[in-house]
Image (tube, rainbow, N blue to C red):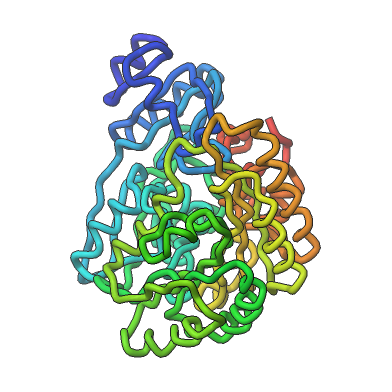
Length: 458
């Protein structure tokens, strides 16, 4: 690191052994343990420009950290330069225009706390300590997507630092091809330093909460759920998890650690109508417990945080399933019975509504079919036996579901390969490659769900 960089960079520059380095290199997934040669903790977009130009000048591998929540650990690299955006925490809400502009270090909890005093929100992550940047650039699934579309469907503009170290303001009128690519193409095209979103009237109270069934009823409830979800109103978000019961206050203590099926409906609309919409779920089988109640939207957004703590080891693989076929339900049941860690789960969302009425070519997200997005997720504390046995459990059950898959959501990619990139982007991959050729022809930004330029991967 030269004196010129020190003189022009406003934020903190951290090298191995320096105070704060080890904390700054840690990410959400505790299985990721990488050591950058330099961490550039940016104080503003000008620092991002400086860091990008320095990395190009010295031919350094670059990673970009926002919330640090990607399961593959793209935020941190070995030996290269980590551009850390986590200090960029500003948000401006315009309640009359129903828009918000937020810098890239913001977490969804921070974004929601800024918009909810105005009774506004946009589709955001269901774990509140997820960063806005990675979730947005990959597409953005969340509780509100059936009513208000994916996060990228609500992205109005972005400020970007390109691979050449140039700053661009990008929207549908200015750099439209890049704007298209940013909405689902991940971090392939530049460092986004701020996002402008469309907001919607949501909250401050919504109708939500878990319904829990004993696992012997899981197959029957899942069969009924697939039919229910296909006809459910847009206002009803539906997430589902098959797992060992955590110590939930609504459950008898003798159920803790036993396999259960959990469905969480989230209704963003009129409360009386929501009660009517949720009633068929309450009457499926014989639930162990249910706690669907009016609650603050902020509480809903953080409801699942305890199930995804920082520092645990994670590995997952995902499928978009146009239908929750009987064979898939059998895999879910068998998977929970054979899981290698009590913290693992097979979980996902019912797709549909506004998220699936967008022209699939309007954004780079990929498949817009209805059905379910399903994750096979291993989670384990270290040390908890060899990590490979947990990963093997994921791959086994993911592979068994594969004949029923229509693709994969890019933010859920954990094993980068040409085959998985094709599965994520389908027919949009050629257009994405053209955007990559124009804005990053040397694949400078390659630590991501990578779309190599047509000249080949670096």
